[in-house]
Image 1: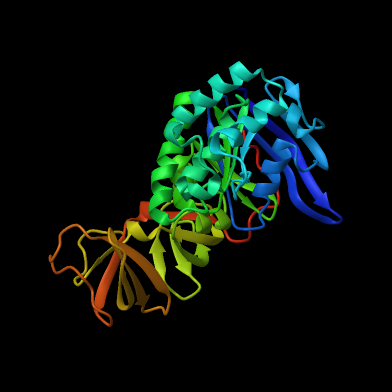
Image 2: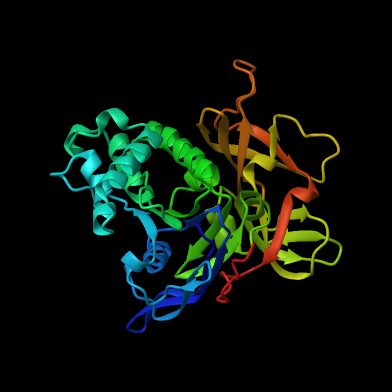
Length: 364
């Protein structure tokens, strides 16, 4: 196990950058998740770490070793592919053995390590089965065992749960996280699933258009997003464009007045998370911001109900209200006249514009 560091890592195809100047440090035993939409460069970054894609510029460091120009088999990384890439004609045990055979590990040591890792992923009774005789979750564990059995310095996971159904994904992601913590193995995982990333990561790396937009903990990215892209991608949010004055009053382009506290005056973007907004039939008491509106949309989501409320300014605000007591009569019907309210400290004001083009350092 080792520390992983990317220094100005780039991949260019012709005139187009797939990844541009990515710098990131992953400490020993840390699980870092690369999160972003399809085509943002996260899988290309992972494959450059593994050595399957050659970097155009920059360096990949594993511990004290510069492995940038080394082939994959000399980097000692273990990778779980999105489609698992199991050999269909080999048993679970033989699939796990493949990397050890390529490394010419003696037969006795090979059998011991295979037995240990299959026990670790709870597949010891299924060693003789072919992939087609295993469930999706069991195939995923075989792929994980194959990556772990070579005792890699870094474990790389490329959308490892995307082929599983929703319920099984929830179970397996907990298993992977517990196993990673128990082994203390440095891990980099790629996903586009926000819930998956928030559940598993020590730190998140949000990417867009081949560039790292922000690196931080789940709370950092949710409560203190660096730009509009991060605020919109990590969780649900309301955006208001407008102008902030020196007294801390924000006036939206639609004419809504919002008290939001301190901030540099000028053209700004106001970010407001939907769960920080209260909704009721009557105006609240002493709250910084209170506005009447009409319920235009309501969706019951189990733990919360999401409302879209059109305000007098013509703008719509999204509200998420916790469903705490069954039959409490707190539901808001479509067309109902309501009041929405939130404190000034719930507002986050940032520069109005697209994500910065400057690369972001990924040091903890």
